[in-house]
Image (cartoon, rainbow, N blue to C red; front, side, top):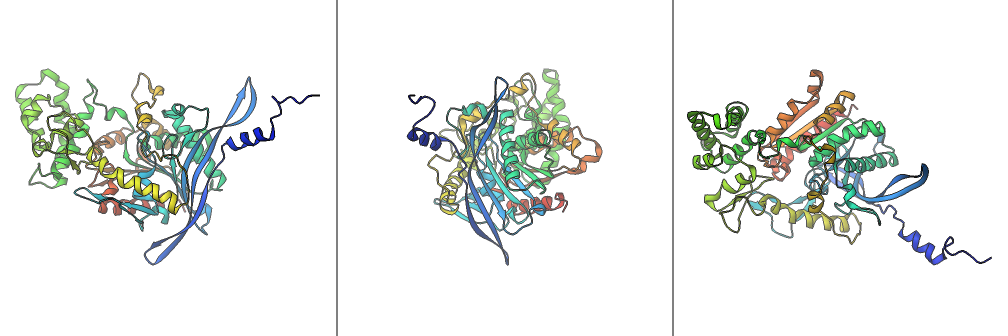
Length: 495
């Protein structure tokens, strides 16, 4: 009988099919981190793991189909007792950002030397040992969600399927489950660390991991948090962000010398009182506000923000954040950073309503990109010719929040639910006073409204730094933040 070549492929075709089947490509290397007089010996494992999905066809199991390849870098301390050793899963936000910032800026055993506001390092930059690395207290796993870093969908799958709230939680949660199972770490204290949208992801994951896998966490670290998007939404009719951003405007104005003769603490206290009382009351009155009250508010805003009374009058008492970054130092022909208001830069002209670029982001993208591409290939010995996607702008622009259609985007209730179900869950919240992207006063507003019993409020700790969104760019803040995170890990590990 003639061979049916449609059902029995030639050896050449079989080899081609086998070669195209995605497989994990992890690489492990050994390293030593000097910390004072000690030397921490650790293993770095980096590469992509394949995410598979159970597929049913007409009700019948049709196998575990590969869907995506997710890039991660894990650091594990050698000769440690796994059950006693905490592990922290870390990621950044965007959405559409890789984990490069927390990895090489704060938590990892190597860090970028990028300089700071007013003293930026020139190329080719530097990469040094991080003696304050959280690796001293916890193993670390840095995760790049699909379409960031080297993470991609497999052939035939749509990247856009992962560019949304729920699928992002599911895929990152599956990476955490796989790593935990394959490395025998179910009995280890477990933590999440997220920055910016990564805090949205972390809050959602705290609930998702409990519900889907029965994985209870010891702690969640929220760095530059955004849990309720209504606190950031300057849409017409929503006056809330104008009040919540005000203390950050005041801090930035103070940094640039526009609120003289007062300390930062004094300025913040004054701005917070006004933002919690007279200011929202004035905005709520709309065009019914008496002229003398309106004039009072204009004067008070000018004294706090460094903006002119004429400008504040023209914007009807409402300072939109992107406008603020262009307006504050317009007379000096400078714009200020959104991620970090301490940074200044130049624009093409100074008649624009908003800055053309964010000078704080422009200051760090070069150093971090160079360091990552060198570090992965040369020191971690992982090779991949794909471009490492630091920030996938297309993913961010097309991110789906279809789950929240017709309502505010919020994960505050998911975090509260996780805390109610797991009363041992601890939450660490870090904010920068000069952060113009996720203002600290907005975070306080959200935390104050979490639906948790009074007994659990002590499970939340807040820390503040005289820096921006990525507070570790400021050297003193980086050291203090490293200490704060180490203390949190130790206290929440229950070991």
